[in-house]
Length: 290
Ligand code: ATP
Image (tube, rainbow, N blue to C red; front, side, top):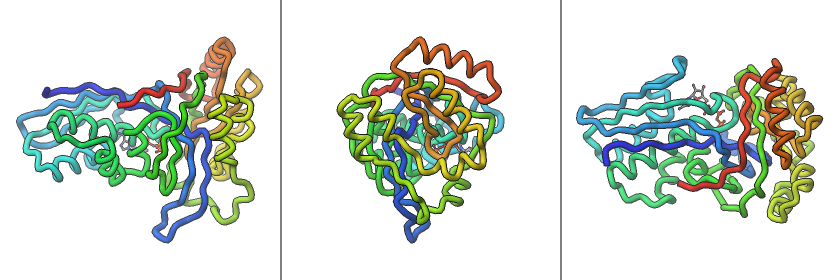
């Protein structure tokens, strides 16, 4: 096999708590992660000439070592002394700098692809050990499904699958850097922490209303004041049939959980027409594994 085509899935956080800041500057988190059926597409080809070539549909994305795809490929080439090259076509559909782990998921896909193409024989755990060197969310992007992420996001526990529902995703026309959000988070002064364990129990019981009551994201304390459109999107979804609505990750993407597909579709079309959202997707929770 000399070529492989893959889908790199986006994630949302159904709950996100920050417990504090560690001495190394990273934050200690507790997050419920969920993959969606929204994805980037990658074609990864082995070439005789050495080096890494990336072609992407987004002209503003770097195609050098600043792209997480490049970083992942180079790390694997160095460790496994791969002398051939790689040519990677990257079709981005996951919104960039949106809190949906697009770059991390692309990096995870490259690690998975190289393991297959070069018959490296790495287990999922071994791929995840490599992935964390590229980014805290990469191990989860290899694991996929419903999971609890702790530590800096790399300590993962598989959870019972989120009950089937529809997820409306809307990214407002602003970009938010994860660095800005964590940099401005006053982790010691947070007065509210979501009940992550209660959320997990409600999810395991298939109790959507319990889930909606208990979902929460402490990073909203930074991103929402900076971009009030996030709150407008949440309110809009809640007034249009969503059981719960929240910002994903460091934002600015907002998602709404729906059990009623008709309401979700109607809101999807209304948001497409509105100025509140630059990108709108309708997905379901997607528990496919690599
Ligand atoms: P997270 O949810 O993990 O915080 P995010 O959605 O906020 O991720 P990404 O879309 O993964 O953020 O990327 C954020 C930054 O990383 C962008 O500024 C972009 O230039 C850079 N980047 C590097 N490689 C990629 C990639 N393959 N796809 C998207 N962005 C990338």
